[in-house]
Amino acid sequence: MQQIAWFALGLAVLVAGTLWARRRRRARRYVLAGALAIGAVAAVLARRDPVPELDAARLTAAHAHWEARGPRDYDLTVDVHADRLDDARYDVSVRNGSVVRATRDGAPAAGAEESWSVAALFAMFERELELARQPQAGFGAPAGYRAYVFAAFDRDNGRPLRYRRVVGGASNGVEIRVVHFQAAP
Image 1 (cartoon, rainbow, N blue to C red):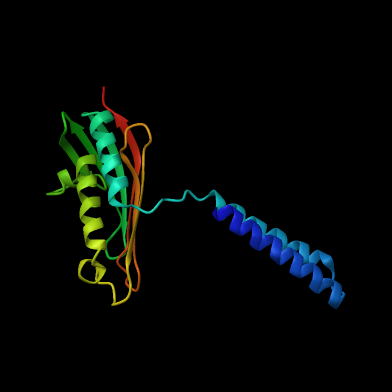
Image 2: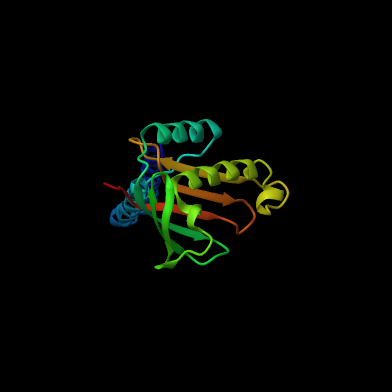
Protein backbone atom coordinates (compact mmCIF):
# COMPACT_ATOMS: atom_id res chain seq x y z
CA MET A 1 0.00 0.00 0.00
CA GLN A 2 2.82 2.35 0.88
CA GLN A 3 4.51 1.58 -2.45
CA ILE A 4 1.38 2.57 -4.37
CA ALA A 5 1.18 5.89 -2.52
CA TRP A 6 4.82 6.74 -3.34
CA PHE A 7 4.32 5.67 -6.95
CA ALA A 8 1.23 7.89 -7.21
CA LEU A 9 3.15 10.83 -5.72
CA GLY A 10 6.02 10.33 -8.17
CA LEU A 11 3.60 10.11 -11.09
CA ALA A 12 1.78 13.26 -9.97
CA VAL A 13 5.06 15.16 -9.71
CA LEU A 14 6.09 13.93 -13.17
CA VAL A 15 2.80 15.03 -14.73
CA ALA A 16 2.81 18.40 -12.94
CA GLY A 17 6.43 18.95 -13.87
CA THR A 18 5.79 18.12 -17.52
CA LEU A 19 2.89 20.57 -17.66
CA TRP A 20 4.98 23.22 -15.92
CA ALA A 21 7.90 22.62 -18.28
CA ARG A 22 5.66 23.04 -21.31
CA ARG A 23 4.16 26.27 -19.99
CA ARG A 24 7.47 27.71 -18.90
CA ARG A 25 9.51 26.24 -21.72
CA ARG A 26 11.88 24.76 -19.23
CA ALA A 27 14.06 21.81 -20.01
CA ARG A 28 12.35 18.50 -19.54
CA ARG A 29 15.52 17.02 -18.15
CA TYR A 30 14.93 18.84 -14.85
CA VAL A 31 11.48 17.33 -14.59
CA LEU A 32 12.87 13.90 -15.40
CA ALA A 33 15.65 14.31 -12.82
CA GLY A 34 13.09 15.30 -10.17
CA ALA A 35 10.88 12.33 -11.02
CA LEU A 36 13.87 9.99 -10.83
CA ALA A 37 14.86 11.42 -7.44
CA ILE A 38 11.34 10.85 -6.10
CA GLY A 39 11.41 7.35 -7.58
CA ALA A 40 14.69 6.61 -5.80
CA VAL A 41 13.29 7.83 -2.47
CA ALA A 42 10.15 5.78 -3.07
CA ALA A 43 12.22 2.68 -3.79
CA VAL A 44 14.21 3.09 -0.57
CA LEU A 45 11.07 3.64 1.50
CA ALA A 46 9.27 0.75 -0.18
CA ARG A 47 12.09 -1.63 0.76
CA ARG A 48 11.68 -0.83 4.44
CA ASP A 49 10.27 -3.69 6.42
CA PRO A 50 6.97 -2.38 7.77
CA VAL A 51 6.08 -3.51 11.26
CA PRO A 52 2.31 -3.86 11.73
CA GLU A 53 0.51 -2.26 14.64
CA LEU A 54 0.17 -4.56 17.62
CA ASP A 55 -3.13 -5.42 19.23
CA ALA A 56 -4.14 -7.93 21.89
CA ALA A 57 -5.39 -10.51 19.36
CA ARG A 58 -2.11 -10.54 17.40
CA LEU A 59 -0.09 -10.73 20.60
CA THR A 60 -2.18 -13.61 21.97
CA ALA A 61 -1.93 -15.51 18.68
CA ALA A 62 1.84 -15.07 18.45
CA HIS A 63 2.31 -16.11 22.08
CA ALA A 64 0.17 -19.23 21.57
CA HIS A 65 2.15 -20.04 18.42
CA TRP A 66 5.41 -19.69 20.39
CA GLU A 67 4.10 -21.91 23.19
CA ALA A 68 3.11 -24.59 20.66
CA ARG A 69 6.13 -24.44 18.32
CA GLY A 70 8.96 -22.59 20.04
CA PRO A 71 11.99 -24.49 21.33
CA ARG A 72 12.67 -24.69 25.07
CA ASP A 73 16.41 -24.36 24.45
CA TYR A 74 17.68 -21.42 22.43
CA ASP A 75 20.15 -18.56 22.18
CA LEU A 76 19.17 -15.09 21.09
CA THR A 77 20.62 -11.64 20.70
CA VAL A 78 18.41 -8.61 21.25
CA ASP A 79 19.29 -5.02 20.31
CA VAL A 80 17.47 -2.37 22.33
CA HIS A 81 17.26 1.32 21.48
CA ALA A 82 15.31 3.59 23.81
CA ASP A 83 15.03 7.37 23.58
CA ARG A 84 15.96 7.90 27.22
CA LEU A 85 18.55 5.14 27.68
CA ASP A 86 21.82 4.00 26.17
CA ASP A 87 21.55 1.44 23.38
CA ALA A 88 22.25 -2.11 24.50
CA ARG A 89 22.78 -5.58 23.10
CA TYR A 90 21.65 -8.54 25.18
CA ASP A 91 22.87 -12.09 24.54
CA VAL A 92 20.68 -14.65 26.26
CA SER A 93 20.87 -18.44 26.54
CA VAL A 94 17.73 -20.32 27.57
CA ARG A 95 17.75 -23.99 28.53
CA ASN A 96 14.67 -25.96 29.49
CA GLY A 97 12.68 -22.71 29.41
CA SER A 98 14.89 -20.84 31.91
CA VAL A 99 17.58 -18.25 31.31
CA VAL A 100 20.99 -19.72 32.14
CA ARG A 101 23.18 -16.87 30.82
CA ALA A 102 22.59 -13.23 29.93
CA THR A 103 25.02 -10.48 29.04
CA ARG A 104 24.57 -6.81 28.26
CA ASP A 105 27.14 -5.55 25.78
CA GLY A 106 29.38 -8.49 26.68
CA ALA A 107 29.26 -8.01 30.48
CA PRO A 108 27.07 -10.09 32.81
CA ALA A 109 23.57 -8.60 32.93
CA ALA A 110 23.04 -8.00 36.63
CA GLY A 111 19.39 -8.47 37.54
CA ALA A 112 18.19 -8.45 33.94
CA GLU A 113 18.72 -12.12 33.15
CA GLU A 114 15.04 -12.96 32.75
CA SER A 115 14.10 -9.72 30.98
CA TRP A 116 15.16 -10.70 27.49
CA SER A 117 13.97 -14.27 27.03
CA VAL A 118 11.15 -14.80 24.54
CA ALA A 119 8.69 -15.38 27.42
CA ALA A 120 9.80 -12.11 29.04
CA LEU A 121 9.44 -10.24 25.75
CA PHE A 122 5.84 -11.44 25.44
CA ALA A 123 5.13 -10.31 29.02
CA MET A 124 6.73 -6.92 28.26
CA PHE A 125 4.62 -6.47 25.12
CA GLU A 126 1.48 -7.26 27.08
CA ARG A 127 2.35 -4.57 29.66
CA GLU A 128 3.17 -2.12 26.88
CA LEU A 129 -0.26 -2.67 25.31
CA GLU A 130 -1.90 -1.96 28.67
CA LEU A 131 0.16 1.21 29.15
CA ALA A 132 -0.62 2.36 25.61
CA ARG A 133 -4.33 2.52 26.53
CA GLN A 134 -3.49 5.39 28.93
CA PRO A 135 -0.40 6.98 27.34
CA GLN A 136 -0.48 10.05 29.57
CA ALA A 137 -0.05 7.94 32.71
CA GLY A 138 1.90 5.09 31.14
CA PHE A 139 4.35 6.89 28.88
CA GLY A 140 4.15 10.57 29.80
CA ALA A 141 2.36 11.63 26.62
CA PRO A 142 0.77 15.10 26.66
CA ALA A 143 -3.03 15.27 26.73
CA GLY A 144 -4.54 14.45 23.37
CA TYR A 145 -1.61 12.33 22.19
CA ARG A 146 -1.49 8.57 21.99
CA ALA A 147 1.08 5.80 22.03
CA TYR A 148 1.55 3.48 19.06
CA VAL A 149 2.96 -0.01 19.45
CA PHE A 150 4.11 -2.18 16.58
CA ALA A 151 5.44 -5.73 16.45
CA ALA A 152 6.47 -8.40 13.98
CA PHE A 153 6.59 -12.10 14.81
CA ASP A 154 8.21 -15.11 13.17
CA ARG A 155 5.79 -17.11 11.04
CA ASP A 156 7.35 -20.46 11.91
CA ASN A 157 7.34 -20.33 15.70
CA GLY A 158 5.75 -17.01 16.76
CA ARG A 159 8.86 -15.54 18.41
CA PRO A 160 9.21 -11.75 18.39
CA LEU A 161 11.31 -10.27 15.61
CA ARG A 162 10.81 -6.54 16.13
CA TYR A 163 8.94 -4.25 18.47
CA ARG A 164 8.57 -0.49 18.34
CA ARG A 165 6.79 2.01 20.59
CA VAL A 166 6.21 5.58 19.48
CA VAL A 167 4.69 8.08 21.89
CA GLY A 168 3.10 11.16 20.35
CA GLY A 169 4.28 14.43 21.84
CA ALA A 170 6.97 12.79 23.98
CA SER A 171 10.45 11.43 23.51
CA ASN A 172 9.72 8.06 25.08
CA GLY A 173 10.05 5.57 22.25
CA VAL A 174 11.72 2.19 22.20
CA GLU A 175 12.79 -0.25 19.51
CA ILE A 176 13.64 -3.88 20.18
CA ARG A 177 15.07 -6.07 17.46
CA VAL A 178 15.93 -9.76 17.76
CA VAL A 179 19.04 -9.87 15.58
CA HIS A 180 19.95 -13.51 16.21
CA PHE A 181 17.97 -16.56 17.21
CA GLN A 182 19.10 -20.15 17.19
CA ALA A 183 17.52 -23.22 18.70
CA ALA A 184 20.07 -25.02 20.85
CA PRO A 185 20.89 -28.65 20.04
